[in-house]
Amino acid sequence: MKRRTLLRAAPALLKDGSRVHVLVTQAIGSLQNPMSDAQLEAKFHGLSDSVLGESQTSELIGACWSVASAATVAPMVLLATPQ
Image 1: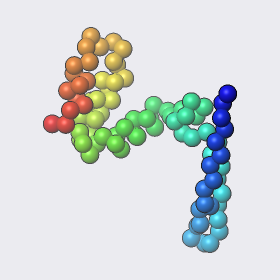
Image 2: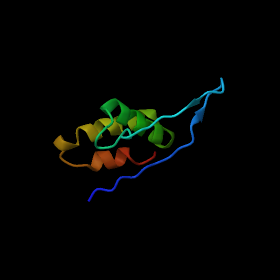
Image 3: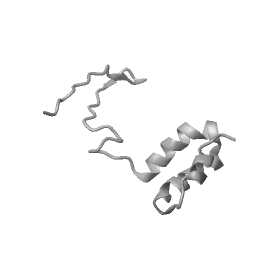
């Protein structure tokens, strides 16, 4: 049986003093609201650029998108390793 979780958050207070209430029923990245390829790549860059650098991260993303046709994942492992 699927359980339903209700989250309550404090309303956002804007500079003009007004409050905004937002109900998010399906978070971005959930099965019902999946990320686009561009959103996924942006998130990966945000998490990886400071470790691997922007260029290496871009190469790794490219390798991930083409993993189905790769003979081996060895190059991907090397790209995922900080230099």
